[in-house]
Length: 425
Ligand SMILES: CC(=O)N[C@H]1[C@@H](OP(=O)(O)OP(=O)(O)OC[C@H]2O[C@@H](n3ccc(=O)[nH]c3=O)[C@H](O)[C@@H]2O)O[C@H](CO)[C@@H](O)[C@@H]1O
Ligand SMILES: C=C(OP(=O)(O)O)C(=O)O
Image 1 (cartoon, rainbow, N blue to C red):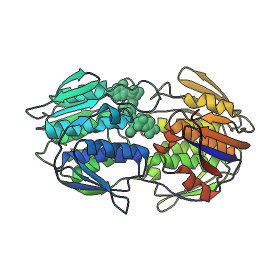
Image 2 (image 1 turned 30 degrees about the vertical axis):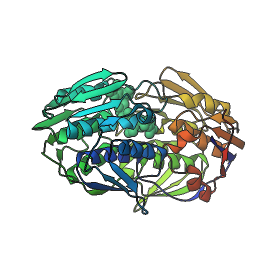
Image 3 (image 1 turned 180 degrees about the vertical axis):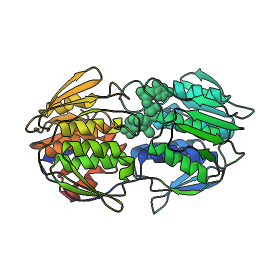
Image 4 (image 1 turned 60 degrees about the horizontal axis):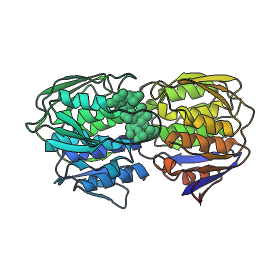
C-alpha cells in the first residue's frame, strides 16, 4: 500500500496547472450514456475515481478508452447490460450517476446502492423520489436499486430539497433523466454548483433544452434523442482551493493555472480574511502569504457558500492561525475524521457536534498519520508541509481518488514528498 513521506517545513514557490474537475467529469461521462455514438470528453483528470467510472461504463457494454491527448472516448452506440454491479459501484459514490441516464435511455436499470468516502450517512432517497416523480417504478432488491419506465419518463414539477439543502448528484441524475422525458420538467431547489452547470452545458450541446442553468430552478423541455459531442470539462475548483491553502500554509507563493476564481468566491473571501493575498490572472491566480494568519469562523454551505470539500484543508490552515476559529459543517455533519489526525500533529482542535473549535498553535509537528477520506488526506498533506520533521501519511489511496499524483505537482514548487510502498497498517 502507498504512503507519503513528507519533509517539512517547506516554503512553496512555483506554478501549478489545475486539472479538469473530477466532480464535473464524473456526471458528464455518465451523461454520455444518453446519446448513441461516440462522445469525446477533454480535460478529464487521471484519477482512481475516473478509472472506476471507466470500468463501470465498460461493464455496461459501452466502449471506453483514453487517447494519447488524455481525452476520454465513450462510444455508447449500444448498451448491452444496464446493470451497475456491486463490485464496482461500492468503490465510488458517483457511480449513482448512471441511474438517471440508463433509465432514460433503456427504460430499465439496476444499480447497486453506492459506496464512497467515509464522511457520514449518504442516502439516495432524493434521487429516487425525483425519478419516481418522472414516472419511474423503483424497488430495492438485494441491495440494488431497480428502476423501470417501460413507456418512457414523463416531465413534471420536481422539488429536490433535502435536510441539508440541495443535492448535487441528485440534481445531476434528475437533470439527465429529464432530458429524454416527454414534456416539460421543472426542477426546484436544484444544485447550483459549477459542476452541475458544466453538466447542463454538456447536455445542451448534445441537443437537450435546459434553461435556468446556475439557478435553483432548472427547466428542461424533453427531446426525443441526444447526439454525441466533444466537450472540455471545467478546471477543478477543489484542487485549486487545496493548492491555495498550500501556498498559504507554507507562507509561500503559487501561481495556479486553469482555475476560475468566479467559481471560488466564498473560498477567496475566506482566504483573504485570513490574510492570504490572491491576485487574479488571465487563466487563474497568484496566491501569496507572508504575514500572520488571522482566525475566521466559517460554515460550509451549498454553492455559492464555502464548500464542504475544502473544509478539512481550511482547518489545517486555521490550526496555525493567531487565535480561535470556528468551523461548522452543514452538509456532512460527521465530516471531521481529520480532527484527530491533525491533533496528532500538535494542532489544538476540539469537536462539538457539527462544529470544530480550532485554537491556533505556533507550530505543527510531524507524526505518523492515517488518511481516512479524500479531503482529510489532502489536509494532512498540507499540514505536513508546514510541520517540523518527517510525516508519514498512510493509506494515501484516498488521495489518489481526487488528486492527480499530488507529489508530482507539489515537488517542483518546493515540496519534499516521497511516495513509498509500506506494509499494510
Ligand atoms: C462526486 C461528487 O460530485 N461528489 C460531491 C457531491 O456529493 P453528493 O452529490 O453525493 O452530495 P449531496 O449534494 O447529494 O449531499 C448533500 C447532503 O444531502 C444529503 N442527501 C443527499 C442525497 C439524498 O438523496 N438524500 C440526502 O439526504 C446528503 O447526505 C448530504 O447531507 O456533493 C457533495 C456536497 O457538495 C460533495 O461533498 C461531494 O464531493
Ligand atoms: C467526497 C468527495 O467525493 P465523493 O462524493 O465521490 O465521495 C469529494 O470529492 O470530496
